[in-house]
Length: 83
Image 1: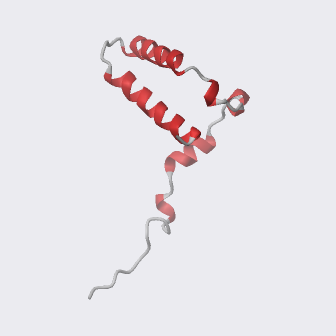
Image 2: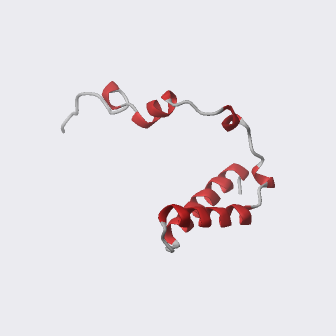
């Protein structure tokens, strides 16, 4: 029977979450603190805007990226609304 010695990743300070530190160092506008009632948001309008904006940014008619973004957004909405 072998025994493991040392520390876990959680105990080792060298492996802290770099992204979390980076977000903490960033400055955001005050408007970002405003809460949005997601139940009042018209998702059809948001979906069309996402599709249009992604097409502008990528200059590509591929539906994969907009559909991926929309699916991630819908997942977050389900979590917020507890559906």
